Image (tube, rainbow, N blue to C red; front, side):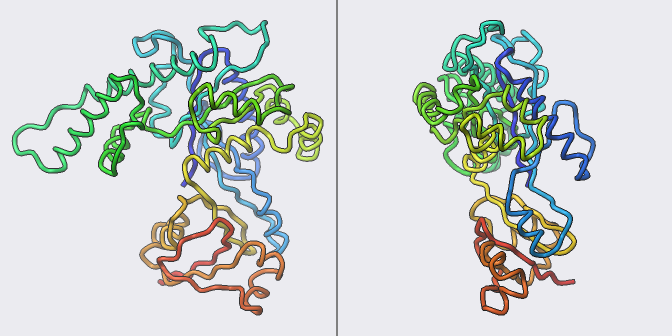
Length: 360
């Protein structure tokens, strides 16, 4: 499972600056890891994970493969985009398949950057949400009411469609109307944008980063959202960080009074919002992080490596990451009884280091 995030926002809110910083990260990543051809509006970056190098040191591997995040960018939306204004609406299809939407909202004070429709984070969010709602409404209104012999599935689908229409007409997002798995499946089938979980990146002046906790709380209250969905970020700082090596990045962040880059915090917020976690595999050939849903069992985790593994699953050998480091790898954890054998229904934990036994 690759984490994919659609980036939306009004023009001149820093969306392009942020995305270009991500593209610089992508170039560095592409030098080390093979990926398929990447579209111009897609940035692929690694999920920061300090555990990988530590595991590699233990198992003597030189190949590290982090989990990745795809950021999908579209042209800045403007008021009236759903009616053809601006360019953004032409590219909304690019973010229909993403797992989450990230709203980039202007929180910086640079008077030299013209506010093209931007008023305040609250007003800007209302504008963007309205355009996304109208785009979804257009999709819903294209659906045909079932006729003739109507199956229970047809009936449930039509009920969900009507429920979603009513929600949008009341000014709500589709995700506020989803009540059960049937609704969720219809929203996914139709690729409804406002059914997706939301993140909110407040693009601030670099001087505001040291007060990020206060800024986060303040904006969460104003936007009426969960603070954990809000990330305070400086696109300008991210752009400067993307041109530095790891040591220089750490020094730069320390000077600003922050511990993690905005990208790291954004990815963590996305994992939390979407209920995701990682498990780890460690061998001489490679050390790798794999992204799964929280609550996934061992068979589902094995399926992330290869779908055939689900059918041929026998068992999983699992060690805790800390134990694995402390006792110097697979042999060490086995000798002291810290290596567990788990079956199909075992619920995966975030710090699991796993080796799957698969049948022929």
